[in-house]
Length: 302
Picture 1 (cartoon, rainbow, N blue to C red):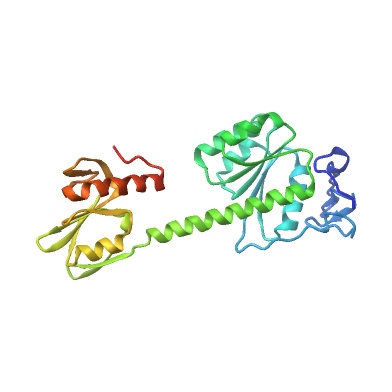
Picture 2 (picture 1 turned 45 degrees about the vertical axis):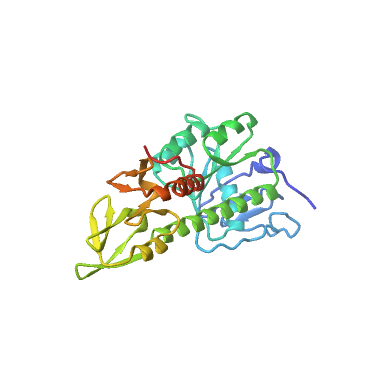
């Protein structure tokens, strides 16, 4: 079966014409003319015809930044063949991309462009946008290590097969979906999960907003960075609901690991206030705090 190679001048340099209102482009694989772009190749032995469509819940926003219009259009045609619902955006230069202010989910970026190179563009882009999945498409192998310095997901060196391009595209979309799931799970954690009644009002409190809790005058006093909230409740129940981001350092105190600045055998110093440390709890507190920091890749706040 015929396998075309991407960006091989003999095949890739498709001639584009715009007679009146009809937009024409040749198939990058078998050179058959495609009318009314975007259209698919009707040559049944062309590998382009056999590209499998992928399903995705929701649209994926894909940007193509290349100074050559022919390549932008051909890349778009192939992407739409695999992901028909993709929202495409086009940028003829690095400056056009940066000035647009847009943040595509996935960006195919050429390196060799006049004025501002793709690498320079990526450096500027990353200052404001670290979320976009960046894929370099270039004939230059020497920039591969610099590519990863700007958080590139992949580095496609021309020429490459259509199967390789489709594989990288699908992996990028899968990576996007995994990131979205992780962000969704993180958002769910931030959903108010502690419902209390204070002053006759029902209040939802975010767990991550609680610096520490203490027993005060037979009530529980929740300290956040912005306010203090008191309600009738039991510290043991609060400790159970709070999970492993909190530690009961003293019978009267429950602290959030994330707000600890420093500690010793008698006191925990937090970003707001301080809590007592029971002598018998100190050793276990240190172990739990170290495990928490290992999970979150932190060394505490100081």
